[in-house]
Length: 305
Image 1 (cartoon, rainbow, N blue to C red):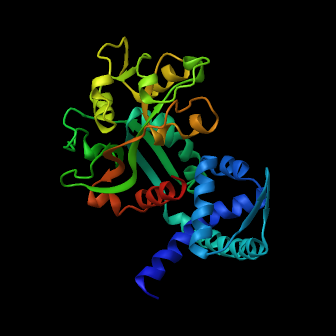
Image 2 (image 1 turned 60 degrees about the vertical axis):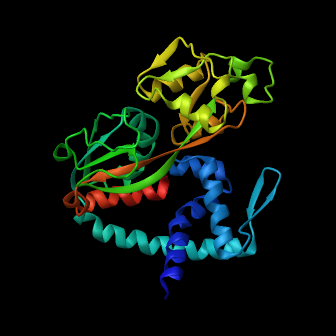
């Protein structure tokens, strides 16, 4: 098998648990709830699977979702494949054990990792998790300082550009900033352009002070950006809660607000996303990456991200 075909096969296999859940429930929403991911993530993966296979797996009529004949056939095969993997996993699980100490940024832990740890501990009950926070320095956006003690954790989850000296990093996803607010902040207003909303209060992330300026520059709005603001917060989870309460406009990473956007708690008043050039990574020493528990966490997060 060629490397290209092997890559496609691996991608298809990685989506089978998502497809199986959607097929069993007849609902992307209920499948997302079971897997601990968003409905949008389920929909994107099913669409990718259909594109890879060149098949339509679900027929959609209004809110009703049902398997096509091709979908029924794949569902049967998927159950067999997943059962084989599950049996093998049970045989091997005894070798994946011990304590896993994870260092992470506070907002990443609260708004992203916590939703995924439950599934990991269920799959690997012999692994004991110790979750601690690590610092981050965003004063020099083009650098990736190692400002935590790598010897104190097995692996760190952080944001940067993937160039931590003497450490190995595994890419999780790129960072995309999204302009959001509560509908209550807008009232009955229906903004049609970014200029229509820039007069509203802005919520500032105090450790990433340049975020608004970089965003405005990307959208050629620097001259429209008011200089005064009254609310700033140290962590993204604080900015998020302030936005939920209708205190102002926020720029937040899409990774952290999928659920809020999906359920309508937050809206994008005008679509104006900005890819920052940063990304989220798992970072650790080469010795740490050889540990089965670290590899298991990497593979689990790759499946549910």
